[in-house]
Image (cartoon, rainbow, N blue to C red; front, side, top):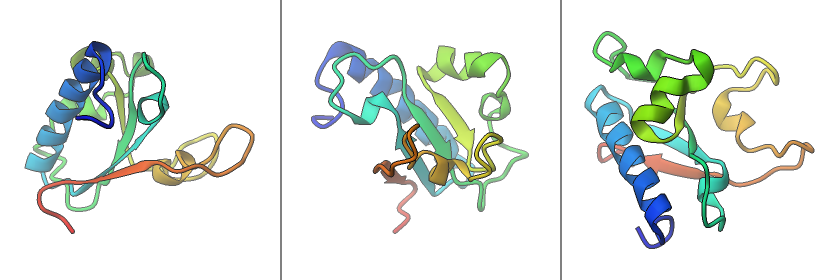
Length: 121
């Protein structure tokens, strides 16, 4: 909470992210990569960007909001405050999202945050 939730806006985003992580963990997701201005020192990030590991996930049981990437992920943004992509190929780069997230627009590399779910090591 201290690292990412130091103000009201960030705490609201953390609440939405926590709900998403809990739902993903219940269907077998073990790892999520977190990216965007939320993982920086920006006081008022607009949202968070994340992608989730599809390995072991029961796609028949997953909340449909995680698979709804239409309208700029509007349903995810309304519910969670951010965007959560399955870790599949990002069309513009040809990279899986976890790798895509580690590249700046200018091509330089950057770090992202990896969250382990469900007691995964």
